[in-house]
Length: 500
Ligand code: ZN
Image (spheres, rainbow, N blue to C red):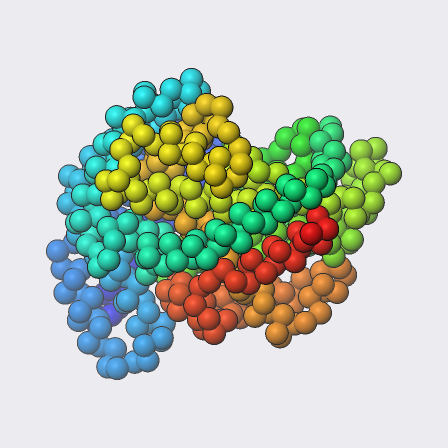
């Protein structure tokens, strides 16, 4: 057997184990009975450990080198050259961090999670602080073990957004901050208030479920290779391009989460379903990064799903599902309702305009913690100051402030910027698509989503994980990742809505 074939065989074992672990995880969040969690945690730990051991076995480095030699100068962007490049990245990230450190981090996070749940409920930051202190201390050690060229934060960010750096993210936010803060201020000063009341009525959950499924199918989600279930926190997961699942959350008295949660998760799912089948069982399958993934979900949630043409078509259909609640409203009124801007405390409920300010705050604090400029005990004060400065809201308690997100307690650090990268890249891709498909509004208004999805498949989905996010964006748009298109979009859309 050639060394390349041997490497592929090993990678297949690792990625099949990882897909299996994802499936157990999906089950845990959807159908597992409550008492199943103890044994399930152990099963997941066993599978993850096996995958890790096989990937980082002593001879993997040699196997990667030997397989590389067998390529005989194959093109740099050939599937096989990319496979080796991506596998090497996974190998190095895994092999460079001592197993004891990984284990200590994971145990610390389990304890921290329980403490966070309690601290959030009782708004008691000091209860969580020692755990957070330990998590950031270990994260710093992990960053050192992984290695980095510029800022230690790069080593954390790289896990979610390969090749991205803190300096790039900082530059992106420096450009974004003034225009965004100005836009929020102008909207506030306009004195105009968009009426969101059509969304806040009683909507039967079964009908919501049926409409959510209908919308997902309309934009192209293939239920022969997917399914839709319910979970407390909506997500998308996949085990191959042939099995890509989404979950949705329904509220009886608020319609938005099921509509936009479905479009969001279906956007993620279309990316996974568009991954070339030959990449199944390999590290090339799926999305280039979390940021690029988020560009796909935001594309369907916001650029398509919160647009006027979309609701010109789908509002009458929605009103057919909920005649009692929606008769008397127009598509235009509904469009305004779903686009109401309101600076608020909670990131996951934020509108398109204010969302990235929430991310900026988290990113700035994470950098300061890592640089030793911000002590953990001072996090609440720093958090609250920035919410008042950027969003003009005052934080009443830490539960609604720095304890709101699960990420830090779960050891998910350096992750927040990927949300903003997703937002800006979505707009960059959209502009690139308009060059080729100028009549997008007409297509959306007549429910023709094939050309739009086709463009994404050709330009983004079919490339799967072959390129770094910044390389992919360069290929598709001819530009580096930047926020100009996104800010132009926001200013134009909300300028019109608020008469600025
Ligand atoms: Zn998402």
